[in-house]
Length: 158
Image (cartoon, rainbow, N blue to C red; front, side, top):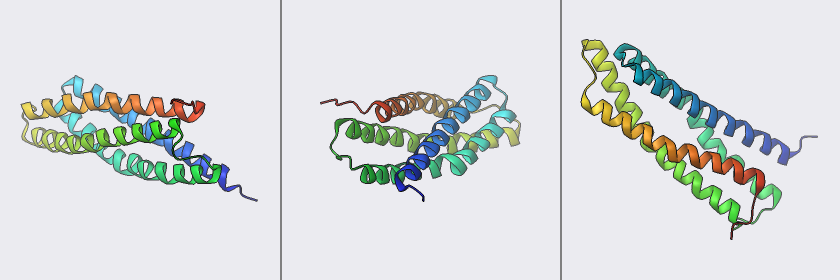
């Protein structure tokens, strides 16, 4: 017999792994490619980063709250438990950063593609987008790390 709680837990852990792993992997790949200064490589990396976000990150972003709600309900947690409230707030923070990052990645992809096709260097606006993209990754990454800790330890925070 299939245990609904263990199934929801497995889906939640799997989707969090995909979310975190894809985010970290694509961010590292794009940033290292960006640092290379190779416009053609940057055009490919931005295109592939956007593809990975649509194929892996977006579904995981959707599955996480759905499986989380299932776990809360199946386990009978109180929605106002401090660790859970903190985790949800951090998820909202990470999500807000990610939505801005998505917009920046799309713009970076367009600018890199255009520069590559025309044989030009990257415009200043690309570098502004890349800096914002880089710095927005830190609060999102930190939030996810803390969420992992909260999910494992479930501390009473207040």
